[in-house]
Image (cartoon, rainbow, N blue to C red; front, top):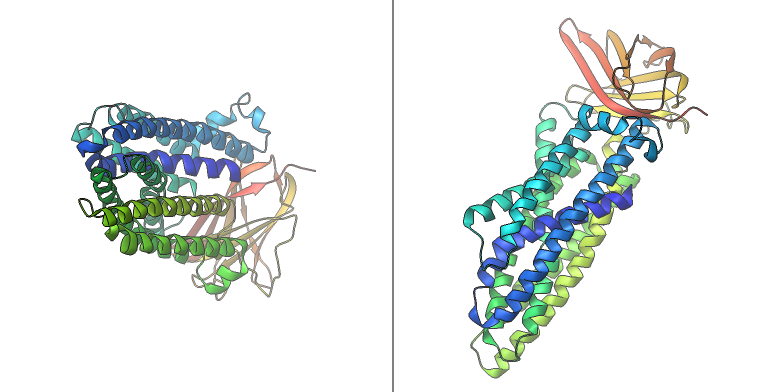
Length: 442
């Protein structure tokens, strides 16, 4: 799953990056008459990269869907086609609905790429604008396949919005970096003293720098929001696998920002066309160094994409809690932490596989400091198969303050939906819901 996620993220970011680069950077940079050969070569290669990226985005997205359907149903990937599981996931789950919407967006973006990446010097403005909107929507809709979805209240609005902007900003920066390196490489193939090549490099670099500054600002702001919701504390950052991966991502991001600062403040000012032979030589040397730095940033960005792919398979650091009173979650249990504005719930199903099981529910206040005082707690477990009847049980509070549900039967493995309804007062209910994975019976 990590490999498929990494490929899909990279392909989606590159497909969006092609559009952003073509519209925001390449269009004005390619207007210089003296770089006709480099411009034709770049347009041709940009089209190949765009179509390959979009195709890989669709194929890897299909593979991701199949693996997710297999995980939800507990069936091998090959059986999700014959047993109707894939169709059920597509039509009856948020993940499937998101994937259908993204498939439509990919098709529309493909239609926009035809005129945008043609050999004509420039596409109509409305085509360019539509392509940018579709590319942003395609990469931004990945937020609904991550941890930002499923929260309640204001978090359910702010967190997904921040994730959407984070993804679009990442595509605007990471997705255009390798294209800048390619463009500068083609310009370096121009004649040794071609001032038009230096002028085009300056325009491209300045416009990329402006786009990068906006993107980095958006990444910083939305990254802080995401870290607040998904980590929540310094101990969670350093004490969980998710937190440590997030710190590694931040370190790589800082490295990219440092290289970008060198590009902007040291190398870009050296791109001075129509200068003396000595200044022209320094300008072309600056172009070479800019290209090398862009490639270095691209490699670091690839590392960030791999980390992001792994982050999606780990529970967020803010969801991983070790309570001293109760100890760690048993190895053979299914566990989920659900957080909302009015409180939180830790749900443990033991054993976490199909067959007879018991459930323990611990309700916490919004700050995870003390147990939440509830008058009555009801637990509903909905099986993954469409049309199956959910199981609803009233929990009983024990001496430690936890709520217990006696023996009940989990009819099948897969991605069940657990809902906790806690009565806190005469007209005050805390309702929390989340998926929980039940393993096959041994």
